[in-house]
Amino acid sequence: MADLTTVRVRIQTGDVSGAGTNGAVYLGICGREFRADRTGNDFTKGSDREYRFGIAANVREPDRNDPRDPQLAFEDVDRFPVYIRFDQRLASAWNLRGAQLFLNDGVTQAYEFRTQPSGVWLGNHSGAFVHLLRHTPSTDAPAVAFVFKPGGVQGANVFTRWTDLVTALSSVSGLKILEFDDSREPEIVPALLPAPTPGFLPEFQEIVIPTGLWDMTEVAWTARAPRRGRVRTSVRIPDGCQFTNLRVISGQLRIVNDATIAPVADFFGDDKTPDIVHLGQRGDDANPRFVNRGVGPFFAVPAAAL
Image 1: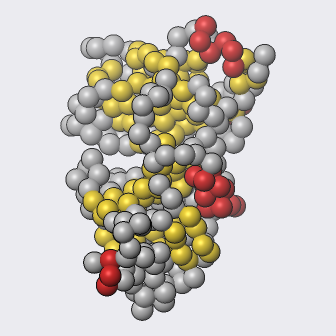
Image 2: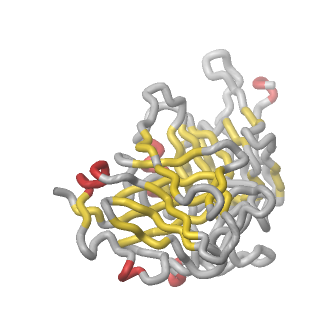
């Protein structure tokens, strides 16, 4: 039997009045519970936080909340309910908007709880549990999501190293969604994080893409935004950075172009290669913003292609 070494749950608190709480929240899996508790206020209104148990844990009391002690088995997950439990105690009620669970840093077995935007209330005057359903990706799914988060922990579909991300993108056929996440988790790996970006709140940082030639075939850029304290995710393109086949950018991205030569210039203006760029809205009705600080444009489209 395979050992369960890492449990990762992402929990979203509703964005309605009174949604936050100081009560205790637990994850139930494999017949036991784990306390979802990190430093600071965990379940504030509109928050979206991740709790990691086992390898590279980021929770308080990690030794008492470890799937390796006693060792849990991956195969036993489906033998018990998977749930979120809320213990209100003397705190206020809690509005839960969603939760997603990933095991052993993989996507082969994932569970989720989804509600309407208004969320579901948990507390003394309602219920205390919500059960997570096993998520089976649809075979008709139009895209695969990848997250580039330099200030996080690499695992599953989250990447902290750009070269690893590009390799993973090239291994998947069809449309890929690349989500840039500029949030920082300094309590996990402080020695590995870059210094805070000047002008940014401590929990965010500007994402800087390494110089090089990067293939973005069938890759659509977007952002994890808006969030409290930061509306747009900022991505800086340094001089010497170029992309091939980058044709779709959407969502609340702020792209800062420092290049002297256009990062996207593979337009040919012929009938065999349609030169179409989509700069459009995402589900949050947001458009990307470009800040051109270098002498080169971001897109260099020849007149024949216009």
